[in-house]
Image (cartoon, rainbow, N blue to C red):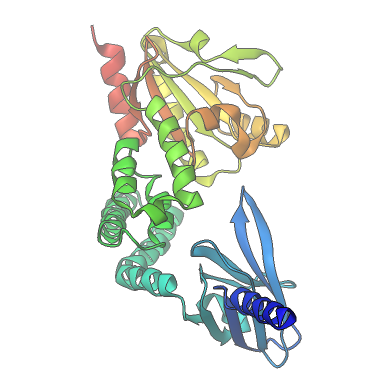
Length: 367
């Protein structure tokens, strides 16, 4: 009798374990015979493989363990750059498509993916308009049509503003969606700490406990320390000759631009002429620039300084995105800049072109 009871209990335990929520992915990808598919995610700046499957006649299956909460993952192939992204959760998920256009594969069975796809669909008209503008912008630059370039930039800014509002609207209306953290993370590059925090506070508790939101909370605290009106934190970093230079040693007499950039950053290189123009025009009136490079190659860094004629002080620890000053200033995209007054107070951030010129002019000409 005791043995029978033991068998029943053991069976119940096994049944309980086997019924634990988990994900099951069934794939049917045309043109993918004898292909190894990888299920991957980004973790701590690296891509980690969490599952894999070998396809036969384009079909494959992944029966993984339980995921704590829905999160964005990538389905890719081991021998090509083809991939698609979707939200993985504890459900039966189906992926169908073609290998040569894996990015367009159809994903069903994930509630979070459905919510995210709904956002993407609502954004499609603006995305298409933006793509057309990018092509027009490249054509205008090649022809040197400055008037058309200015028009396109204004139109692009308007579309970007509309895209931003769509993200904000989704987060407000979907506080329980696990798609909201990734949208808020992308939005965090465009808005200030207080607004990010206000969006975090409307999210459901389960959503707030995701790693993306936990990381975002840490970033918000860093952003608050370098908000407009705060005193810029001091730091020391080496110049190209190995000399340690502090930020505070470059303060005054009237305005200092702390400029984060890199030789490999296209937008930075496009903005450099505007910084050069401001420097030439106002250097003798009390304006200076302190450049912090997020490069890894010393040679590329020095060549860009020479090519772009950046004749001010430059420092770097050659650690790319792990640059100590960039982390201190919560820099997550470049170019990024902080305009400081003579006391080191941050008076403006990320000014570009004519806006930078106008603000520097106001600061150096004030009595």
